[in-house]
Length: 218
Ligand code: AP5
Ligand code: MG
Image (cartoon, rainbow, N blue to C red):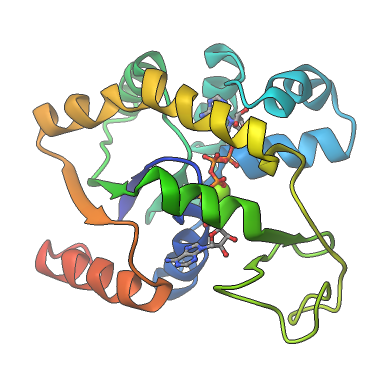
């Protein structure tokens, strides 16, 4: 099951990826998470990426593509994987195709989470992330049992620096300009499935599970 999750910021890609990765026992590869980890540990990659991420701009294609192509060489990707937040430009999609062709591999399905900007903005402004384990909450939709504290590990919850209103608006614009063209790219390839990202977490998971079983991917 080799999947790409495509959709605007706040569509729920990361939230569904966590559940899907656990259910199907495949790795969740989020370029956003990899980049944030590099920023946190002050690696050269992180220092380069931070200024782009803080503004809600995309990190240069060659940087991100290199990370993913290397990650896909790991043995744990043999039985499948979820690419969350990659590719995000036509250039990235073409480079991914080239790398997969070389490895005689292909993406099985691209899931497009169609989500309205109003829903995306509401979700991102309410998102809280655990500093220790990275689990995502939402102050209204998916609240922790105790405010500001992670249910899973007791860690402190914080707001992502790029979840401020101005940066969210820019991320949505960047998505419209640079990532949305990928919808047509994958429709032409015949690999795109559209779902509504506006559904609740459990409802959407059920829809996805049915899509995978109908397509005999699971
Ligand atoms: P990245 O981390 O990928 O951020 P993003 O695409 O902006 O997406 P988000 O993580 O904000 O949204 P999501 O769809 O994962 O939603 P989530 O599940 O968290 O990228 C960050 C930055 O890194 C980019 O701006 C860029 O600079 C750089 N970058 C990353 N990849 C790159 C690439 N390929 N090329 C270049 N640069 C790259 O949900 C959001 C909130 O809603 C949460 O609070 C959650 O609890 C809640 N929620 C989720 N689902 C539901 C639901 N169904 N119902 C109700 N609430 C829900
Ligand atoms: Mg995410």
